[in-house]
Length: 171
Image (cartoon, rainbow, N blue to C red; front, side):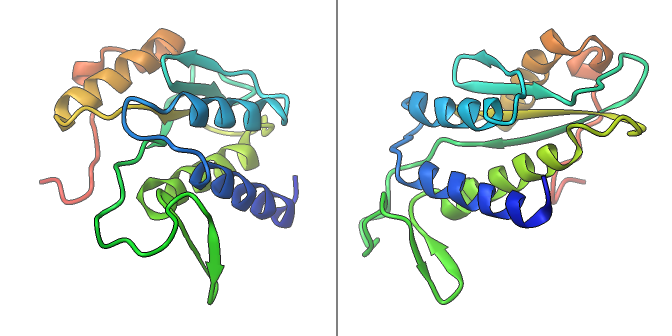
């Protein structure tokens, strides 16, 4: 897939995600959209609840693993939100709609990166993509939960409690 096609694909998926209600705990449809998107590229996925998991084509237990993770659930729009939250609108080079920024944009960017590297045989590392459903309000529990999900599908990840997590603004 070339860059232009990857960009068009990502933007199309983001618009579909915006147009689909996915409040926390109610993200079944967006999970299906993501799984279908990956399936359209002949990428097998595993669904664990509303978490969608995929591994690069040439995954090897002998390589370290890079985890790409973002969520696809949203919160209800703020009372002052003036646009239709489920109607993706492009204006002045920006895309508006519920979840376009937090975290649909980040998620489709990670999916685009995953698609770019999926077929590469020469990677020095594995890539696992996790499109997470419902987020817990306790970040430490989220990190352990995601690691457990991934560990089921990647023996090389090891003990999730011993993972060295890197989070923005962390000491």
